[in-house]
Structure formats: structure tokens, C-alpha cells
Image (cartoon, rainbow, N blue to C red):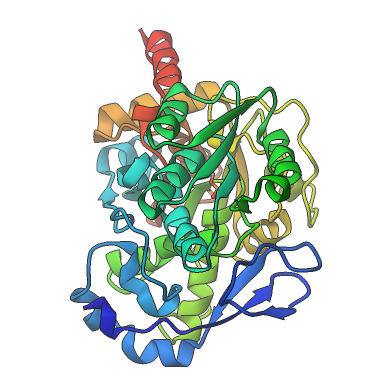
Length: 396
Ligand SMILES: *Cc1c(COP(=O)(O)O)cnc(C)c1O
């Protein structure tokens, strides 16, 4: 049982200035203003975290207990989502070994569950009285659910035009929902201005260290599901970039534990053509991204005009010989219909964007036909009725 396995978390370290911080209390950013990363005693972790040991553990993300925080999990069964061999969609884009990691099957229908499970676990353990978050939709729903399970009040700040399902779930979970006439960046400002006065612990993307820890488990799962190997290419719909950073962090930890060598999957960020700050920065060879003016896309999770971790995302894209690609809303809607009709996967537009990127990269011969490619469907299509209505109307 899990109780016999100990977390090897030792401290937090700044992603930029490398200053260390204790982990046994509530923590937001480093004093230098950059995100903190959790660090473990990986030598100790490697002794008990083995494929054989994992075989007997629960089918959720907390199975990787050695490399997660050690407090009693606030859990709804997140993680260990299916890795599906998408043969027909693969044939449609010219790939034999195309896989979809279907994160839409997580609690609250998106991979945000992983990050918020870890963040709420820590916030509860260290006494947060209330939680606040700016959200494009899915992170709000996930926070509201985990806060409800933890018995901690939360405030969700979202753009007024967030998909209806996201607003409803937050209200159902009992959250205080505040709608802002603006983008997630405006919601972030609102949280920053109100959190101290109203006593919320800020669980914004990358402003606390544990959402990355939850999302990194996607990297561990890939390794387990590919039976001790990693794919050649991972295509990830990038907003704040937490999942991409998390998976790359997981691969670094695996190398330190001797599970893998220095090779890495080539990481691909796909963004919406109407909000593509990382693509623009990658193409123009910048180390950071500039704020994207007038961001607009049906893929609400990708409507992030400026990511706090942009410098980390860009560094990982280059270090893994990856790339960045944009997809238009039209392309996403069409690809969503393809994934649904060919594979039975009802994807979020963000997830559909990964199929658009795969097709473009195969056509450009950046991906070779025999390579193993994983698409991340980061959310369920059931929360995007407005987008799906448009997709179906367009397709007749
Ligand atoms: C939040 C979200 C994203 C972007 O995730 P990041 O890890 O912040 O880049 C992508 N897809 C969906 C469905 C999301 O909810």
C-alpha cells in the first residue's frame, strides 16, 4: 500500500536564480519573481520506485509517491489515463505509430485535475484558508472540485465568455465565481490585487510549485505505458505550458534515477493561430515571449497571451530539438471531427489542435512516417458544446 512508500521531496528551487526554499509551508514564487520547482532525493527514490513496484500500485497519479509531495492526497482518482493507438487517424496523417493520451478522462474532464490535486493537497496540508485562481475554464473547474473535496472555500476568476460548462461546474462545486470582461491575463491581475485583502492562497499557473508536480506524472505514465520507453515526438497544446514543463522535468528526474539515457522525445508546442506567443518567440529565436495582443480562439485553454514560464518552455523546445506550430480554429474544428469519427475520441479543440500539428509536421518531413508520436488530448469535448456546435454546423 501507498502508506509504506515515502515521498523524497527535499526542498524547492528557483527555476531561474536557483535559490532554495523550504517545502514544508505555503510557497508562491521565488523572491526573484520566478517559479519554484520541487526537488527530490532521486537516489533514494530510485531504490523503491521501480517498474516492478509500480505494477502493484493504485491506478492513479499518486502511484509515483516517491517523486510527489508526501501529504495525504486530496484525490478524485486523477491520472493513469488511457494511451490509445490511433490507427485510423494515424493513417489519415501518414503515421503508423500515432497515439492519443486521452486526458479528457480525468475528473472534471481535463488534465488540470492532476495539477490541482497536487496543489490543493499541499495548500490543505499547510493551512490555506481559501484558494484563488484565474482561469480560462478547466483549471477553475478542477480547483473547484478539489477544493470542495478538501473542504476549503475557493474563488474562481474567469473571462465572461468562458464556455458555459466551466461556469456551471464551478458553481455546482460551490465556488465563488467572478466573471471579468477580459482575458485570463486580466483575471490574473484581479487575483493578484484581491488575494491578500481577501485572504486567498494564489494557485495560478506556475505561481505555486505543485501544479507542475501533478502534471509531470503524464511523463511518468508515458514511460510506463510504453513499457519503459518514451516516444519520439510529443505534441502538446500549450497555454501556460505547465504540462510540457512538467513532462520535461519528469524526464530529467527519470534520467537522474537511471531509467532513461540523455535522449528525449522532441517536444512540440501547438498553439492557436489567434494566440501564438510561444510559436512566434520560437520562430524568431527569442528566449522569452511577448504579450500577444487581441488573443482570440475557440480553444479557451490556449487563450494565454503571456506565459510566466515562457523561458522554460522555449528552453525545453530547443533542448529537445522540438518545434512550435500554430493551428487555426477552422483547422482545429475539422480535426476534432476527424478524431471523433475515426477514433471515437470526443476531444477538446486544444486536443484536436495536436492532430493539425502532426499532419503539418509529417507533410514538412519533420516527423518521419515510422516514428512514434503522442498527441495529448488535454480535455473532453463534452465541455465545449459551443465549439462542437460550430464544428458540426460547418461540416454539414
Ligand atoms: C489549460 C489547458 C491547456 C493548456 O495547458 P498548459 O499546461 O497550461 O499549457 C490545454 N488544453 C486544455 C483543454 C486546457 O484546459
